[in-house]
Image (cartoon, rainbow over all chains, first blue to last red; front, side, top):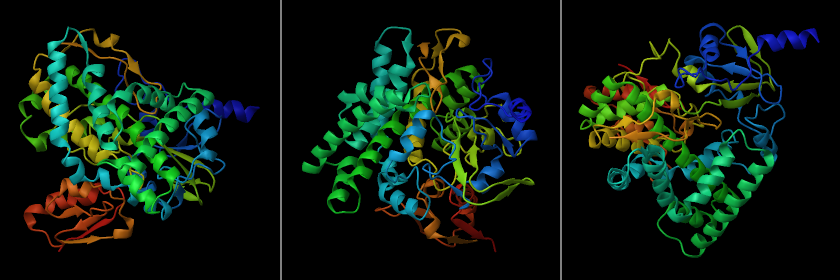
Length: 409
Length: 65
């Protein structure tokens, strides 16, 4: 009893709530632990107390350390939610739950569509999509909701075209993926959403097997036919690409716009430097760092004992890496709470670090470069239509974002 | 400067090809990095250092001469 009370007082609950007055910053406890308790612990939904690693240097070392595993099927793995824990035993081997060398083989099978030169080739199409959406918004009534007008449609059009899914079906997969990544979903709701999305993609994949086109699902269909990829793996990957491919970029577009509207000097600087691709690329990195939208931690389990700051992480212990901790670590990023688009920020951990770093990061970068480089130049009078305090944040998912962003111009 | 690349470690995140496109490319079939120029011109050294620093798999090692 004593021990339970004592530890309950010492170990903070995770995920933590942010301060409402600074919704872009990680919770104060995260920053305190980065400064003072680099090998601390947190308590998660099931009452377990995994290690909590927040420093940039520690994350770089440990996220490349083969003594830590991403095998979510192992007892003691610090699952993100009850739904994830319930689903884990049923998942096939995927890039998100295997370690090298199996991971290396699986990842090499799915990298091609996301390589730099392939996503660079999409840049003109992304620009065209964005220009059309801006035209539509400007021709419509004010205020407009930037989430629905720009933030969500840009990545949704891009990911559906890349994958080869009809854009007309977006309502279904936006709804089901929202349920799948929300922490508020029950295991039953997640399972139902998973079945609906899975059934849809299985039917679509069957069409690609019969009549392949020029898209990623067809590419996977060819691999399945050639015996280079399992059918189930192709379906799981399709679903993962669809889910990961739209809400995250949508959040970055909307949150990035809000953050810039809060920092008019930085917005002016970006607008006047829009013609300089290097500046815009750097601005994207700084906004990725500053916002660090994935706020539920990267999770691993220790294969063997690991020493961290004179403490021993025991074999079988869970470990959580809070990415915003590293991105607000003063040792790596001086004055981290300052949005400074001229700061060298590319070493941030917004996409994670190590072998499991985001598969779609180059695509996300190109999307954000196009949007941040265009939107404020084309709409120089863009402004919030409501007080900042009334902008509704969506904090309940794997990544945070905005429910809406009312703007005028 | 000499660029050493540990291919088995490469996870094809592509950051090197984005940061230092004159020195790194990616293989068409699986995205694994290719070193185009193992002894890059000094004018490229800064971006090569950045590419090595951001490689998520720590697969790029630079021997500074």
